[in-house]
Image (tube, rainbow, N blue to C red; front, side):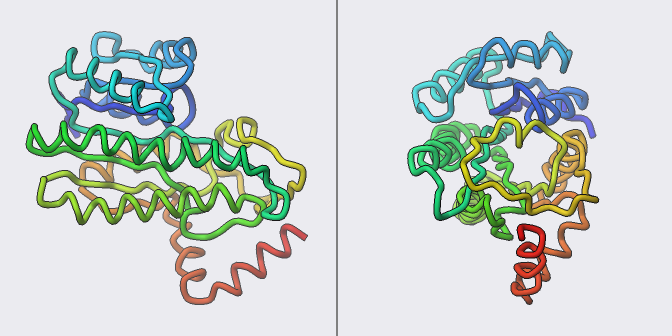
Amino acid sequence: MELSGKIVVVTGASMGIGEAIAKVFAEHGASVVMLSRDAGRVEAARGRVGYGERTLAMACDVRHREDVDRAIGLTLHHFQRIDVWVNNAGHGLLDSVAQVDMAACREMFDTNVFGALGAMQAVIPVMRQQGGGTIVNISSVAGHIPVPFHAAYSATKFALNAIGKAAGVELKKDRIHVLTVCPGYVRTAFSENAVRGNDLKQVRPGSVRGISAQRVAAATLRGYLKRKREVIVPWSMYVPQKIYQLFPWVVEFAMGRMAG
């Protein structure tokens, strides 16, 4: 799995899944540009990733198109091309539909949806000019199964799934591939970093520990190399997804019991 010479840009790369993706691509020979709102934290993550001669860390808030354009410009200055763009920046919002704060909801959509869409619009012309590339959107199983008390977050992931899959059809003629990665429960600081509302309930079996960010990163790399349309990780999450498609009431009943 040699990726020598490939240039990979990862948003939200200061921790968790983003940092793990940066590391696994760097380990396989790619040069990696790590982006995050917090310049200090992403530089620290770059130190943990290693491969200092093939990595860069930059401050970039994907909510602001000028930040994205600047990151793309600096990447092209250093490496002349962008082979893979990974939209990973995002955060959660934990609250009920009845009480969710609308300002917090809009802010989350700005990052999770419009930030990713804006980055795609910024990098697509670059990939078209160079003759191809890959866009990876890190979504969630919550983009297939609406999760109670995470409804607004689920909505951002449903939107990201739709954007990525439609874009994959639109961009095929330009040799631009789009991969959507949908992890299940992941052991990261997601919950700690999520905006927390007033109406919080756990909708997750207590026995589920979640998978590591490294496992998500490895699945992302495999999906990229195999030019997959979508990757769901772990594979066991295909089961509830298919059950929800066929018998949604079964999954909703189980979630209702857990939230009750």
